[in-house]
Image (cartoon, rainbow, N blue to C red; front, side, top):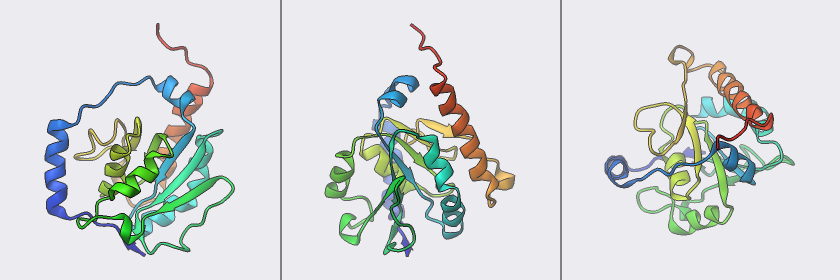
Amino acid sequence: MKPIKVNPLVRTVLNWTRRLLFKPEAFSFNQKTSETQNVLICMPADIDRFAMARDLLSTFVSIFREKKVYVLLPFLEAEGYLSSSATYQVISAKRGDLNLFSLPGREFVRRLKDLQFGISLDLDLEDGFFSCYLCARCGVPMRIGPKRKNAFPLYNIELEVLKDRFGSREVYEGMAKTLKSLFSQKRKGIPNPA
């Protein structure tokens, strides 16, 4: 199992161009949440964090009740590390799905666009460039991820992560608690301002 690493020079160029060219669109949280049928959860590329996030995956999946959940593995040769279940389907990239710079290829992006994800959740606390770049390329309107340098505009909802607990399971438990609170408020029917 090898983490997908995007060429560093290409990352730098993409970081600069996205800041200049990317125009984030406004959206209604309540409307996007109720309209969304498919959700993409992007797993961490670090093996230790992957194990922590995998242990809490059912908790994250349960946040998006009544939605079809897909789980993206940011690895090559990842068969057997996580299998699809009754509550989610696993997506992983093959070598042919990536271009020369290890960015998602046009055909891979098209396949994911066809799933029409309305929400993505990135669980990668460090790098995460492959996953958040893929979600932006696929046009996912609500992209949730941990707050970190260069995260905007690839994420449009950022979750604060406590640095002193960075290497512990508590980070993911805190993210899950925040998301449960956020999405349960939606289910309680917070009225949209007119």
